[in-house]
Amino acid sequence: MMLKSPELPDLVYVNPPVLIRPANPTPKHSIYLSNLDDQSFLRFSIKYVFVFQKGVSLCKLKRSLAIALENYYPLAGRLRVSGGGPSSEIDRKLEVECNGEGAVLVEGFMDFTAAEFLQMADTPNRSWRKLLYRFEASSFLDIPPLIVQVTNLSCGGMILCTGINHCLSDGVGTSQFLHAWAHITTKPNLPLPIKPFHFRHVFKPRNPLHVTYPHPQYSKTTPSNTHNNNNNNNLLNLLRSLPLRPVSVSLSAAQILRLKRRCIPSLKCTNFEALAAHTWQCWLHSLAVAAVVPLPPSLPVNLLFSVNVRRRLLLPELPSGFYGNAFVLACAQSSVKELNAAATSANIHHGVTLVQQAKAAVTDEYVRSVVDMLDDRSVRTDMSSSLVISQWSKLGLEDLDFGEGKPVNMGPLASDIYCLFLPVAGDVNAVRVLVSVPECVAHKFEVYMKDCCYSDDEDEDRINNDNGEQNSFI
Image 1 (tube, rainbow, N blue to C red):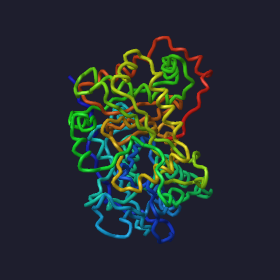
Image 2: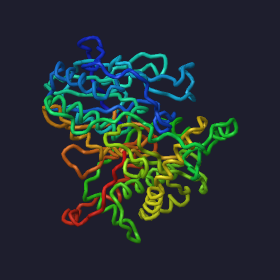
Image 3: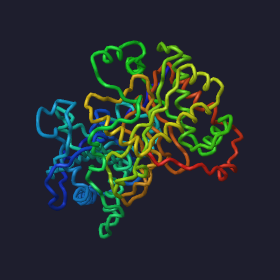
Image 4: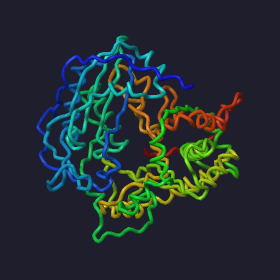
């Protein structure tokens, strides 16, 4: 029997929410959103939760946020349909109206301590939703791009929760903004170390459009494939029809090194490549062994992961400080039979090889091809038989400091079927894997994840000899 996850106590809002406008007048114009920015896959807010042992004055945070929004003024604007028209049409092109309307900030209090939160911090549950103010809106476009809630705790600590519209920024960009806000809070008289670059023209599609790659991670929405996506081969729909449970597994540098030794024959690989391959194989294997969903042996199963392209573009290069979406989804593909066999033999070679090939395919031309393909508004990310991994562990979010110390925990507001690689506070080399899976396979998935990595006699001394490069993507 599954134990019920502990819930947060009631939250009391101290005052009504306020709009934080830029400290000084900002440019009034619209900003084009690229095809990477406004794809339907990204029409949501990235929700971060930071737990601090000691709180920061709300007045101080308000003042510094206003200055930060003077620099990152599109976050104080509003999304709208480009060229006007009904805002409910998801297929329409979006843009940002930079009108200085402001970000939403609200203050709350909870009779709870940071230490108590840490005891439940690994696995988010529905009660966490009270940590971010729910803005009532009739559509996604009506929600302000930035919502902030500061929850003061009875111990003197605070929980900072932010909701940042993904159409305006990727993980690297959101981290850049949050660090700018923290910098202004702690060093108000010093210039920002990174000056933001707002414009997205680098990612404009070519004329004529030229799609040069197959891109299996995308598909066109047509009546025929909409019907096919409802059949038993749609793993996504089947997973969402089952009760889900978040699973969190933390791995130290020694345990990741041990996992790398499971790559036979040996391949030089990064920590991400090894852990992504292992997670993919364990995820599929747990679903197959439990037989909760029909998985034909020949069914193709994708691993989609985001690759930061800031240093992969040739001409024109991305300007320093670009904080829009500068990633594409790489796609590794294998069959149920092949992934099962690899997981059963506890060998990550198969998965690592495919992940490396998918990464290597992301060239300048590949990125241009994706941008051109997404100009067709009927193209969607194909989630039907895919595991999506997003890496937050290399964004520097665990180092965010508003003057009273770094967070003792950071992570998402909620857990979903999308997998996150998260930082571990106090251990720069560790990674926490968080993903929601069907309740009936949660235990199996956790066991499979740990089997290749946990040992009583881990060799810590060999970590310093592991010189594999670290990825720089979200």
